[in-house]
Length: 298
Image (tube, rainbow, N blue to C red; front, side, top):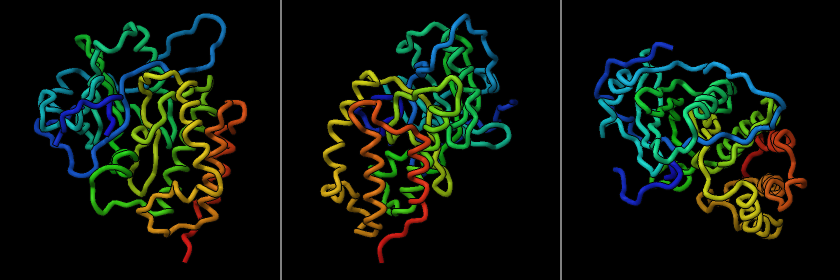
């Protein structure tokens, strides 16, 4: 699983403090997504920008130590090159993911990082993972997010968990939710935001297969170069005569072929080589919406 950009090779089997010092992560699909912080690309506006407050609770390091048993192994979910991810509970019982970023990999000054947290804290949408708190005490950079009850899409699709195969309807619902999250960032936030790290591990899945886009990450490839690379690989496979080869064999042919063709056509537009030929996310959302009611072939 990709948790904090590149994962290490060795395997890994507000008023918000919790009194449980030995919190153990729930069993099941672990939380995915996320990575190191990097300022999302937003439209530039003239003149100096006034710093806005952070709309999330500021937790003390002592509170977080109590939640995670001093960031111990029992609360550890995953470890990557840029952060460690822990499980915890707020005082109201809400489950959260606690991301302790490796400050040595984050070149941004503290003022820039604070501005990034402020911006992310003000992103309020049902299809975007909400920031639940933060801590900058003693040069730490720690962020708390909603806990994804079903984990990330990458782990659901490619993990070793048995008996958790997504059916056609669940896949469409997840795709639709991800599109709604991007629509919010691209079309509804002012100035618009380009995520720059959309991948299956940054698509979080909650109860009833509700989907939220996770936080921004650090990519080793520029966004435009990455888009062109994906476009070159994906476009030939999404042609009408080859789209069946892209269908997950785990579906056992239990899907509506016409709806699959329509979904592939939308995907093909989204990976066009030139950005000007790609549809905006509002168009994508409208194209996906009718597929929510499509039924597998008898």
